[in-house]
Each structure stands twice: as C-alpha cells, then as structure tokens.
Image 1: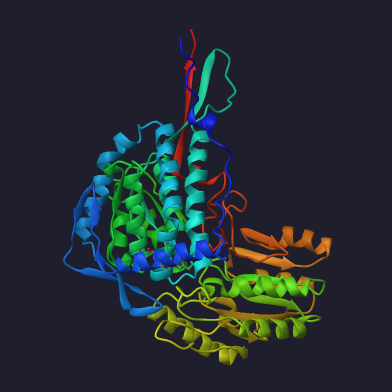
Image 2 (image 1 turned 90 degrees about the vertical axis):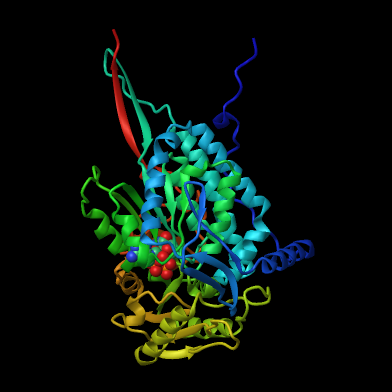
Length: 526
Ligand code: NAD
C-alpha cells in the first residue's frame, strides 16, 4: 500500500517576501529595457469586458494614457453599461455555488500558480506599471513584488483557515468551526497600486471561495486586464471572476447596491469610500444579508523629527516617504513635524536633498520621480500648491517640472500651521508641509491632529519617547526610525484608523477573515 501523499499545507515552505530585482546589475537593466520595448510595441490594443468567460464590447471606450507622455495610448477599454454591470453580478452569483465548493487546497494551488506566473512575467508587469501608472523602475518592482507576496501569503492563510481549529468539545459532542465564503464580492481598487492592491483584494476574495466582479480604476485598466490573463492561466475558472471596466461613477453605484452583492472590497479616496459604505448599508428589495464593506481610504501621514533624532536618517526618511511615487502613496508623508531645536538644520538639509531629485519620464531609470497620474490630479495638486503659498513659506518647488507629461516639482512648505488646509487635507502629490513643534508633547498632538490615521513615523534615539509614540501616536501603521512608506506583506499588516478606513490589515493574519463567515457545527455523539 502506498503512503498517503503529502498535502500542500505540509509541503509549502514558509512565506517569505519576494526579493527585489537589483537594477544596478547590467543584465537586469537590459531585461527591463527589453520588456519596456516589448510592452511599448503592444500599446493601443483593445481589451474586452469578461463576463462569465465571455468577451464583450461596449459602444463607448475608455482610453488609458501614458502619464509621462499623454499622447501615447496604452490601452483601449470598454465603458461597461449599467446593464453589463448588472449581468456581471448575475454571472458571479450563478457560479458561486460551484466555486465555493472547490476544496481550499485546490483554490490555494491556483493562487500559488498565479504568483509563479507573475514572477515569470515580472519585467513585463513592471513595464506596464511604468507606462500606465507612471511608476519608476524601483516603484514598479515593489508593486509587482507585493502582488506576488499577496498571492503567496493568502494561499498559505487559506490553508491555515481551512482548519481544523482547536475547539472545546462539549461533553457528548464533536464541535467544529469552519469558515465559509460570503458570496459575490465587488473589487474596487485605486490606480496608485494598480497591481498590488487589485491582486491583494481579488486573491483574498477568490481563494476564500467567493466569486468576484473586478472593477479597476479608469486610469489603470490595462494592468488589471493583464492580471485577469494571469488568473485564467493559473486555472481560475471563467465563472469565478468578471472583468468590468468603466467609470466608477457610472457603474459603481449599481455594483454596490445590487441585492446579490454580498461584500465590497474597496481601496481609494475617503469620499468614494464613505459613499460606498452608505450605499451598501441600504437594504434593497430581495436582499437577505447585511453587506460587508472593507474600505481602505486616504491618509495625511506625519513623520515626527524629534530633537534627539538621527537627523541624516530623518531627512532620508522624510524625503523618500514624501516624494517616492510622486507622493501618491496612501502612506506618503505629507507632514513633517519637527522639534524647534533641530528645525532649521532639518529644513536646510531636506531642501538640499529635495533639490537634487530628478523628475521626468518614468521609463528613464535616471529619474527619481515620474509624472502624477493624470491631468486632473495635476491641476488639483497645483491648486493645493497655490493654497500653500498663502498658508506657509515656499521653500522649494511650487510648480510644474519640464516636459509634456504630468510632471511636478517636489515641493516643500515650511511653518505650516495645523489649521491650514495643506496640513489637514490629503493632496496626493509631491507636496510636504513642515511644521515646528515646541517639544515631543506638542509634536505628538500635532501628528494626531488629523481626521486620518493611516501611517506615521517617529525619529528619535530616546527610548522613552519611542514608548510614548507606541502608546499615543494614533495610526494603523506606526514606524520608528524609518520611512513611513513601504509596508511589507507579513511584516506590516496594512490599514488605517478613523477616516483612513476599516483597518482591514491587508497582508496580515486577520485579513482573510473579512472575506469569510464562520459556521459552528455541534454534533451529538450517541
Ligand atoms: P478614488 O476613490 O477616486 O477611486 C478608487 C476606485 O473607486 C476606482 O476604481 C474608481 O473607479 C472607483 N469609484 C469611483 N467612484 C465610484 C463610485 N461612485 N462607486 C464605486 N466605485 C467608484 O481613489 P483613487 O484616486 O483611485 O486612489 C487614491 C486614493 O486611494 C487616495 O485617497 C489614497 O490615499 C487611497 N488609497 C488608500 C490606500 C489604503 O490602503 N488605505 C491604499 C491606496 C490608496
């Protein structure tokens, strides 16, 4: 008799973060350049909607452009009609009974295959991110690596949650707890992590046994279409996912309020998140559940630079957190709160470093910063810069950088008061407000003076102040003596407090539970 074969759970190595490609090596640089050329050659292709495995077109098209060179069309997509959106939910609903019964191990195996495909196509995905989202090489590499991490991590999480779970057995009974999927989920990601967040929300939902309708951002639909190819290649059945492009404003309400929608996984702005939360709470005729909303929203993140900081480290931490991906990360530092004892020196050093940053097309690896995502984002950020000129002292930047793309100078405003709009409102661009603090008490109060609570960081060599920051700095992701961006799956489960969202802690051990419901089964033994 042959021994029973080992299960996936037994053979899978422990999770580890995907290593980054080292672009200082000539062979990696040339692989990246080749991928950029290949992807450029595929510009302008038309992509269809996918509903229950069927490809469909719509009369109206959505054009996705390269923000470094807006004349270049990256992809042509469909603007789904409300009727197509309704059909997408119906298709996902019909397939749910089949997909939800596929064993956990099989679903996890598909997700691991998706990770493998992403790994194999990493340079190509980097190139799509560079051209469609305006990410520089290292930012694109981090986005794709995080997407791979989510697949690897949630596959393992599903195997863990598949049980068995240790239970107290009531005398005379066998008692169990099992996790079931919820139903049809609507996945609504933002454009700023167009692969990682899309993949994270989609893969957690699917591996848990839910069917999904994926509605990507209108700024980054091509990257999403490419991931949908990966899902199909990895073996996810056609019925398990629908791909629906179009304007969020035109079809979003319908998707959220459909009575067969069981949950919404959203990441994006506070305004849209609150609207989704409100709409989803309204009971629709025929709806037999309370919809679950996972909503991760904006930030107004602060780094505290204490009088006992390591100033060089603090300057670097603020610089990369404020200007990495042009300040368009939800975790970006947009407020530096600096003890008055080191304020002048910090500002001087930061100004010098900021003025050395290069801005230009994202496909050129010499540029530290690429473009902002689109024209309306650029106008909105420039408007905030004008507001800032009345609210603070312009230290550097303050306008457009040269070139046809949506390029902005990295900008610093100093002596910004806490009531200022540029201190309170999410700008989502390369604009930093610097504010002096009398002491650590005031610095903490200023940092907490926000409706948001996503990330924050403190630079200090004083252990007691570190202890106080751990207790009093009210953010979902607190960092000590490092940048406030760059959360790693498994190490820094991600999600914020207050208006930053539902604190879902993506990439952590609590996340998958949001996509499932637990059923307790007690069986009386004779
Ligand atoms: P957004 O809110 O404009 O759009 C997010 C998504 O919602 C897009 O797919 C969009 O098409 C869709 N949408 C728009 N209107 C809709 C509606 N009425 N119904 C349903 N869907 C609708 O945000 P954005 O500009 O794409 O992303 C930037 C924002 O995302 C920033 O505020 C940033 O802080 C936030 N963000 C948060 C996190 C986090 O984890 N907390 C991560 C990344 C980005």
